[in-house]
Image (cartoon, one colour):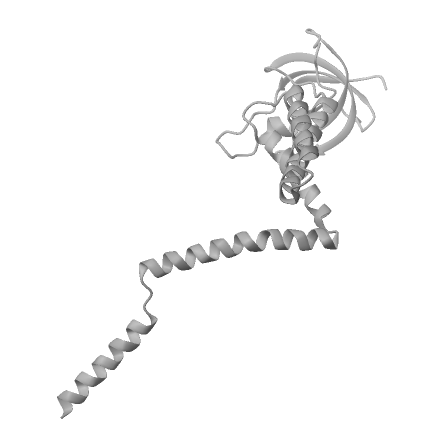
Length: 235
């Protein structure tokens, strides 16, 4: 009798396990149904957002995405290519007046290309002059900021007035000079003439590391320099 009850209990447990077991075809069917439901839901959600007038919130998002695409490109895109792409997509958007979904996708593409165009125009506007290699020259400039470092030296930010021996044709407008010592009583606003070794900012050491060369291109950093010899000049 006990063995019979044990067998009945085992069969009941097996039935319960099979009730909640999901086979591979059922999983695939469930995944396909979820994907199809998402496809049906996306147009509905977009139409709802359009009716509420909130679709314009996507414009700055996709415009910023276009700027990211521009600066992340392996080679700098040409202005002519960006303008041609923008004209072509705008023309397709004008022709797709009968298809709301196509017009929406083309509008988002226009926002992306417009972001690339803004990044290109900002790059042209900055027109940052950069050093091609390390060079030693004599700089005459005006002190903008001074700060002591941990080793007792100085980091001096200078607006460059002139460069000599050699004169730099495409020299920087502002540099950060590292010096072991400065003349006595020198202060912000004084002129300073020094023999310096200019170094351009380096790119990333490894893929994905911080790119100092890109930061200087958009005018956030200044070229660095080591001061070999310095003296104050007349204010």
